[in-house]
Image 1 (cartoon, rainbow, N blue to C red):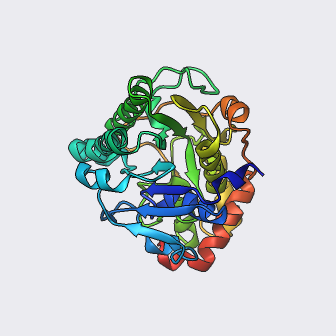
Image 2 (image 1 turned 60 degrees about the vertical axis):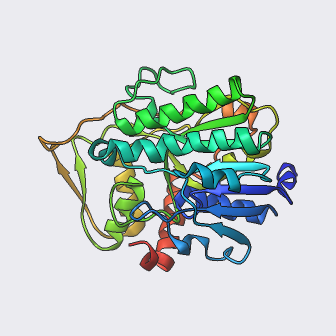
Length: 329
């Protein structure tokens, strides 16, 4: 099997205690990789030691900060694959503290790239970016050639990191790959605030018997990808040859309206309800229009495709939090 290539590989997962990073770490361990997790446990950004339950004895952990270039210089040697999931995911924080956003979402990645240029030129480097760097959507589905005009500083930081990745491949010869991720959901995401994964946030509210609020008519369309499907794409990108300088839009490839997403959650949880209300007057409008990923490139080059339907993904997520919710609410 193609994943057998990961057996014995030395892999660094930066931000490996968070939602996506920990899920990828679990998948890597299952495939026999030697995994080191680097996570500074930045307060309020989703790192959760429980996310490593079941693999904590099979991974090495380093609490260095990606903003420290000197730390990265000493850490990166010897790794075959490096995943960077470090960062902050909140567009509102990017407006309130743009310098922190830039330091975490692009400055840290620049540190990683330069450290690899100096100390591990042969490493394969994968960066977790976002659909938010696209900005206003002009055509559905969105492919990798769509213009990027971010409507938030968060998206701007992600775009800067992508451009740095492509520069270090083009001009410095590093093997860098970028994923523009749609809307991930599933186990291991924190559910204490709405600033991370909106699907998980709504699920948590419903599980507590609370109402969830829909602004506007709920017809806006989003692409929701289950975390295991996303993780498998990252693993394949780590071992597929000749992906240096490539950018992939990664999602389910299917659109789901906001209203339908909320109704599915209510049906699965079996309690709670939806409140419909107009958009608040003071809401910071970063609405980009409907979004659905064109995943043809990922299907072709990665030989990857999503396997979990939205309904099944919600059921699996609900089962996880019924058992482990106390670690995430």
